[in-house]
Amino acid sequence: MTIKTAKLGVISSGRGENLRYILQAERDGWLPGRVVLVLADQPDAGALRIAGEFSVPHQFLDPGGQTRQEYDRQLVDRLEEADADLVVLTGYMRILSPEFVRHYKNRILNIHPALLPSFRGLDAFSQALEYGAKWTGTTVHVVDEDVDHGPIVYQRPVPVREGDTHDSLKARIQRAEYKAYPRAIKMFIEGNPRIEGRRVVWKRDERRAEG
Ligand code: GAR
Image (tube, rainbow, N blue to C red; front, side, top):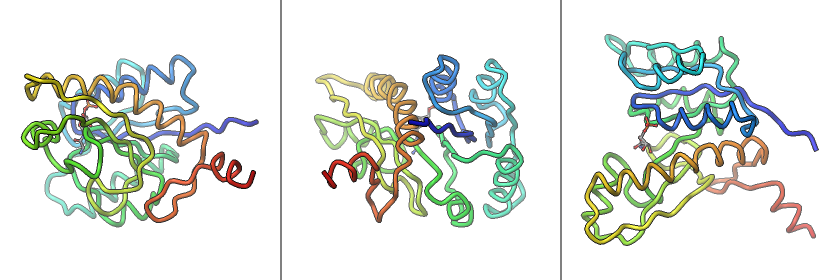
C-alpha cells in the first residue's frame, strides 16, 4: 500500500498550539504530510513564532485596507506558490470567501472546540457551560461556505465536569484537540475520502460494504 503524503498550508490567527502538535507529529515521522507554509492575519500570532521554531516558512499577511476577496486572493497566491495541496485552519478567526473555499474545494480542514453542530461560532466553551451540556468536545471538519458547518472528519468527546469554569473546560478541550487534529489530518490524507453531501465517505468503509 502506498501512503500518500500531503503538503500542508496552515492559516492561523492565534496561539498556534495546534500547529505545534501537527509539526511535532510531522517531525516524529508519524504524519504523512509536511507543513510547507504558515500564514497569519495577526502580526503577533504565536503560530508564526512556532513555525519559526520548526524552521517552517511563515508570513504575516496584513488584511487591512482590502476586501475579503482581495485578501483571500493573496492567501491563495501564497499557498499556490508553496504548492500546498491541503489547507489546515488552526484558530483562524476570519470567514473565508466563497472564492477561497471553491478554490480549495474539499481540501480545507478546520478544528472547532465543540461537537458540531452544537455550539458553533465564538466561545464554544461558554456556550457549552451556559447550556448545561454534560459532554462537549472537538470536531475536525471539511470547510464549506458556511461557518463551522462542513462535513465531519473526526470528533472527540470531552466531559463537562461539575464546577468547571470557562478556563478549566477550555484547557480540557484543547488537550483533546492536540491529539485530535494530527490524527484527523493523518486519516484524511491516508484515507483520501470522497465527500458526498454532508458525509465523508472512507474508501475502507466502501470496501467493507462491498464485502
Ligand atoms: C482552538 O481551540 C480551535 O478549536 C479554535 O481556536 C483555538 C486555536 O488554538 N478555533 C475556533 O474556535 C474556530 N471556530 P491554537 O491557535 O492554539 O491552535
